[in-house]
Image (cartoon, rainbow over all chains, first blue to last red):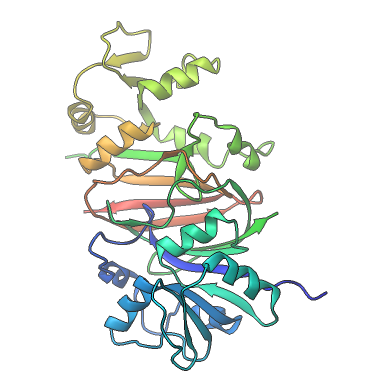
Length: 178
Length: 178
């Protein structure tokens, strides 16, 4: 039996654990912007062929002029509104937990969860993530939208790597220990 | 004028940002225990001569059989209850913000804040920390007592170092950029 596809969280957070300010501003990510440095995102994207993201996050990215943020992947947008697919983009109004379980048992590369916090925490409550690649931005936002909500199960992790970069970003890569 | 003494937070957290479980259990820290490895704590303690900690944290440590957790330092325990000093231990029932400001303008080595979350967040609300040395334990607790509460000011940081250790602990050291 081939190994099951893994669900991976790849996300950036402030040191104090927020993925966005309360008004969903993302300008603070600019403190680590550096020409020619993608913090491993391109290489990571090569390891996945399917992306799952929440509707609010999708709409936010679309409003920034990126209607198809993952053009070479199969993208599932989790939404309560039924809507026809747009090319590679599938709007999924069913249970996201069942979707992820089904995708994991299918064939293909790994699955990337591209946020937002609501979807991440739902999937974490069901212990569905197999790896976490978290980039810590050298800033305290003080308040905002938290990456981790309360009410998840305890999970043991194994550190795969921790890398620091000249602009002060630290990227930590963990695997879920089951 | 000599440089002002710095206030430093040296603390361990789960990857999801909790410093203790809801019932204040600390057993999960055992996953990184390793004979002969103190994760730099001894060297750090040499850089400070004064410690400030909250009453609940002090009582917790005392209940574990350590009535004087910092015997070679001047220790301020922040409490609402007036109480006479016990040797090097001073029970401070006044404003902790004023105490820290006064200590910073005095002479001596740096000042170590040894928790807990309530004191840390009060001092962060007043932007009093100059450095943060945070050790990430490779575990998600899922819920508990959060290191960072909402309602603090935004703070820019500079990464000083990020070190990983064989047991999977990652220690990040930041300085406040003012």
